[in-house]
Structures are given as C-alpha cells and as structure tokens.
Image (cartoon, rainbow, N blue to C red; front, top):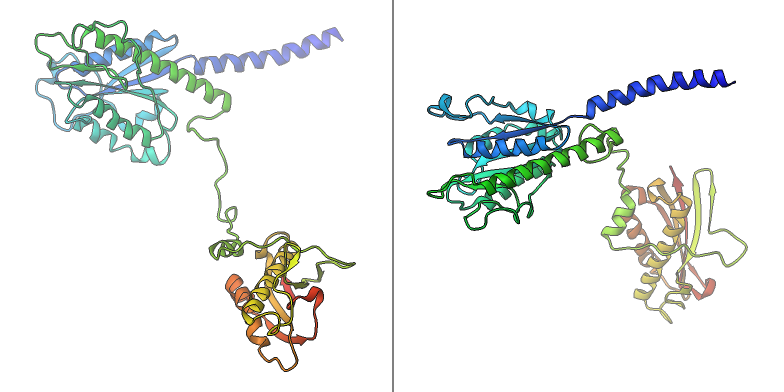
Length: 401
C-alpha cells in the first residue's frame, strides 16, 4: 500500500513540478516598453531613468524604443539616442506595460507621437491594450502646458482601456526645492528651457526613476492577475457574444411602459373557480372592474354611473384581464399569439343602446398594446345586474403560441 502511494505521488508530482516551472519561466520576467520621441535628447534622458526604475523592480526588463519620425532629424546619427531602434505599431501588444515619453508641443504630445498612435486603430478595436498598465513622462521647454499635455496624452490611453499609473507625490519630499522642478502629480517632466541649469535635474530624474519602478510593479500585478484568471488580455471577464436571441425585447411590456400603464395584480378568485382556464392553446378569462379589492365606479350606467366613468371601469376591467392573461402566458404577454373574442357585459337600464361605444375603450386599448395580434371578434350585452354591482364585466378568449 505504501509503495503504491509513493508511486502515485511521484507520478503526480513530476508533471505538476514541470507545469509549475513552466509557469515560473513564462511569468518571471516583466517586459516593459519605454517608448519615447525626442529631438534634443531631454526626453531620452528621462526615458533612460524611467528604464532604470523599471529594472530596479525584481524580474522586470525595460526595452527602450523610439517613435518613427515624420520628418528625418538633422544630425540624428550624432545624437546619443541614435542607436535606439524605432518601434512599429504592431509590437505594442507584446509588452506587459508601456511608458510613453514625449516633448510638450503646445500643451500636447509631439506630432511624431500623435501620428504613431493614430495608427493603433486595429489594436484598439481588438482591445489588445485593454488593462495594460501605462504611464506618461514628458520634457517641456518653459514648462508651460506640461500638465495639460500629460492629461491630453491620457485620453488616448484611456480610449485603449489602459490602466494609467500616475506619480502622485512620490519623491517630492526628497528633491531639491530651491530650484524649479518640472514634475507633476500626473507624471515626471523636465523643464528643459530653464537657463543656466542642467536638465533634466537630479530631482526630475529621481521622480522618473520612481515612476518607472511603479509602472513595473503595476505590470507585475497585472501579469499575476492574468495568470490566476487565465486571461491573456482585457479587463472584462470572457463571456460568449450576446446575440439578438439573448436580447429579445418584450414588445408588449415595452408598449405598456411607453403608454405609462402598469398592470394591476391579477384579482384573486372570490369563489370556487379559477381566474383562467387553458384548453388546448385557448385561454378563457372573466373579469370585472376590481381595483385593489374594490369595484371602480359601481352601479347602473346612466343612473348611478356616467358614461365616462363606465369607460374608465371598462379600461380597468381589461387591465385585469391582461394581468390574468400574463399569468396564463407564463409571465410574458409576448407568448400570446392573438386575441380571439371579447364579450362586454354592461349594467344598463332597459332601452340603453351605447354598449358598443363603452366597449370601444377595451377594444382600442387591446389593439394599441398588441397591434394586429390584438384584433378580435366582439359582442356587447346589456345586463340587469352584474357581480359586486360592477358596471362592466368582460369575458375574453385568447390563443397562446
């Protein structure tokens, strides 16, 4: 028995350890792209410090790349960033996080960066960057508009569904406050145009490094979450597409809402009978003008009840019929194939002739709600009395689907 158990444990442990090691290999490294656009090199220096902060985080690797230029830069090959390769738009989906860096141009990102991101429509529609952590750093001349530039940059990232990592007040207590600093609560920036000052300053680079570390930390959390949930991208859980069948609209209920009509609770029987009976696909219903346990406008029409009150009672009676019909149709009036017959009984004196006019209140409402399915044959009858002194009673026959 012990030998069998030992063999089983060994057989189980080997593939488990292999799977565990494979998972460790796949997820041990966090790849973070530092994508920048620079002309004079200030943004490049900030990008280098962002990359250093990323690699301060255990298991994180920073990849520096430039945005392709719309117009070639003069003497580019002599610049310190000349050896940094250009990125292509399709590779953005290959990273666990992205840091975007640009010079501030009139309160916005540079034209090169804007043109590059404008090519990401297919990535956006396929939601490939959704949930990926992102952060923004910038280099400004005078510093004017730097916060607005970062915030406007965020708009593009938010449209992609990326998780934005700001700087808040990180590092502000540690930097030299005796000189102007370009940092913001939204992202590190440099005041490149300050005269007689080395830029980026040590304080600006310090915050940039902390920002890189924070981005790598967020990327690791995102990676671990995906490994636990089994998702490879996206913020929302994976679900089957919703079809028109799943979203089938309840037409009759929608029409009731449009007309501001709420069906009453189906009146309970007051004797040894049922509120409806289904025979085959036909439903048989009888109702009077009950409303919350009392009869609306009871009495003899033209003597105790005006014709207007009788029409209101007729309307209430039909609503009671529909409430019962809804129960018979399994809670959905769209399961009714058609109305077949309505018979209206009215408590009227001898010689009364306007039964049809009163019954129109019920017929018109039924057709208004159900359209062609609500068309029906009809009869109207005068009665010398009706149950509970109601001025109207309706007998209805409907066919179910």
